[in-house]
Image 1 (cartoon, one colour):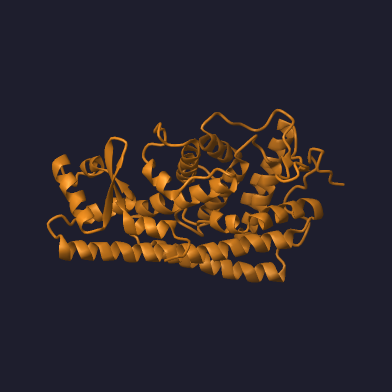
Image 2 (image 1 turned 180 degrees about the horizontal axis):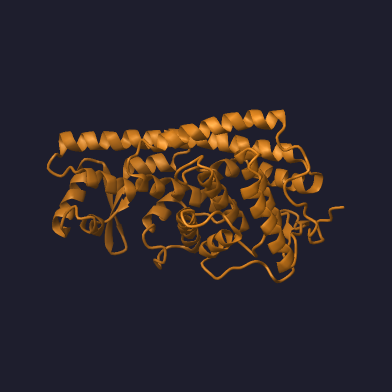
Amino acid sequence: MFNPQVPYNDLPRLPPQADIETKAILKACIQAQASLAELKGMAKRIPNQEMLINIIPMLEAQASSEIENIVTTADRLFQYANDASNTQADPATKEALRYRTALHKGYRSLKERPLTTATAVDICQTIKGVAMDIRKVPGTALMNDATQQIIYTPPQGEATIRDLLSDWENFIHQQRDIDPLVRMAVMHYQFEAIHPFSDGNGRTGRILNLLFLISENLLEVPILYLSRYIIQNKQEYYRLLLQVTTEHQWEPWILYMLEAIHCTSEWTAAKINAICDLIDNTRERLRNEAPKIYSHELVDLIFMQPYCRIPNLVEQGIAQRQTASKILKDLVALKILNEVTVGREKVFINLGLMALLKGDNAR
């Protein structure tokens, strides 16, 4: 019998004994995979993939951190994106930026190794900004925020946790007969149930979801803004996770995750399409209205770095400092950028892009 106040060392191994590929689940898989395929194709509209990797994961960093009540804004994230240690950045912004860094590091690590426990450790360490490892000390328990009642006590003991993580790894890589999206939903539950770290488990688990989709070739870059759906359905997310633990109800949880993938894929694809249209419009405007300053590299830069500074143009070889200053002021005159003073420096904000990124609508 499950007892929320006792370490769940008897957490069932994978794969689950329940039917995790019911008719309803397989039907939802078809819809979710179609939406993912559309998103994957839409991403190719932007030839410079670094631009995409720099923009969408920032939204995911903000939202995934907000799920854990670490609240910052898109403006702050882009303002300090190139200097997370800036003393003017608040702690929440620094932590959300570390999430973005962890996602990028995890994405690059896939070229060297598959998803493993070591991947999870590296991600969690980067998010927290301190040395992290598998829990060794007892006492971790999850409580209801309102009542402070313990609702779940994860497995305890390093050997037990590592054994469960080894089983988790085997499920990811060896259960190839199970639909990959179903595997993702199951692996996410199991990772959260194992709760291998003293902190940062939720954010680490959500990064692992994205990396898994890439490892399965369902995405090429980490651009699925999945945390947006979870924030909008946060109570349901935690309720269904706990329902798997207490009642072994897998189908509602898997259907929730498949709907999250479907809705988020559609929303993200529409958002990327809108960004592409804005980039094309900006290029056309500059060619027609300011041909002397137009360059492909300039437009790429102000979309790669929505909070742009004079040194950015210099570093990219677009112009020397004095000319770079004039170029940015010309873009302000065209109302493409907005000039603000942050501390002692001038910052030039891509108005259209920031409006797109901050808006909840896809356009």
